[in-house]
Length: 344
Image (tube, rainbow, N blue to C red):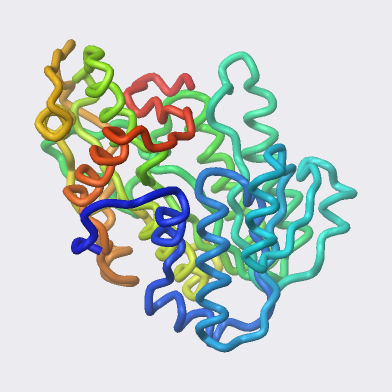
């Protein structure tokens, strides 16, 4: 996609984010049964579901693609339906609702809670650990990909290498602990019932409306001081994260496969902001000093298994600068990637 100089509008953006890779089309050509996305209305779900639908159509397969959510934003539900994706509206914490969901052979689990957890810790734990137990009981015969977070590794020294899938978790704060709890629940039920599962540890998905790079670009645009304490970060184009997560259905296993989904580069926050400063013609101011550690994941295993990301950080930076300069829509959902104590 490096030949694309600018992304015209939201429709163009979502077309790119949902463009299936060859491996996704190949997977959908041989995957048996229907596919449901739980928590489909979040930041990644709509374009991931559309990618699955487009790949299924390209593969010439007749398969139901179903998106489940509360759909507090009805526009997302309408958009999915227009793309040929069935939608079901309801509360996933309601056991009766879960029981009513259709039987499917394949499931992508996107539900969870991160922001707003401080002061509402019990709901965070219910969403991130209780809900997986309900889903695992309901879909014990299904193949599952479940989204988790690279935050379960904790902060790692910059000179010690990024976190690998075999590294011991060291979660900091209740959100990261509840994410590890989610993984442990999926692992328990996988071992109990023989359910095949892949756990995706994501660090960090980015497009033009949200993500770490968008957070930094907006600070540069508004000429706000930029804190350099969390001085390094991973990012991956959301379309690439969508593709890797879907393709990982093929390798779901018992006990679960763990897979980091992360970009190949460790980015310097200062250098990224300096690039945005030049592209946006803005002056910069910084506070703090780069800490000796950060949340960093090593994504090489996923790149080896499913292909290298199609979009580089350099491409994202140029696209985002152009998007911000021309007043492109954002979701207004900061990532808070700079938080170091796990309190979101």
